[in-house]
Image (cartoon, rainbow, N blue to C red; front, side):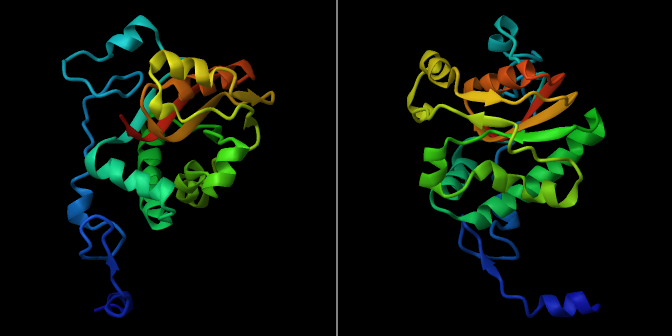
Length: 228
């Protein structure tokens, strides 16, 4: 038995955030398997598809400004519960768990699609940041920032409009509410990755992509933790 195996017996177990059973991390292996992924998704916006089509009806009618969206989970049940606790209950250990999963997904994307010049997290308004105490998207990027050389650009794009909570609005209201919410400095990146925690209609990420592309970026993709 190696030294690390011997030391592991002295490391206290954590309680799984979902089932409360002892776990090596804040989410046990059994509960991790309950997080829904749904591999058949729109190749543009990552919406779950029930047919054999490659694109959803919304993207066929109006393609988003970003090139492609990637997601780890379907936003429901266990994944939704964990994300809410991470965002609103300050359970940063859950954010740490998700940050490792985001890192794995990022490596998979880069291995298949090539590297990005920068990662741009969706910025929060000053009011929302003060209320929450942290930007949850920055927390999701902690492992990527630690283990890769890709710049996490937190300054080139700012949120200049404090929007209402979009979860209570329909699609048309979301588009109107998020319009003009961001501004960006001139950027010379050829390819960037935009990151957020949850995407429902895609209005926020589409608006962010529009502003980023207008600033001089060549193209952009989207990575989200969970897709509704």
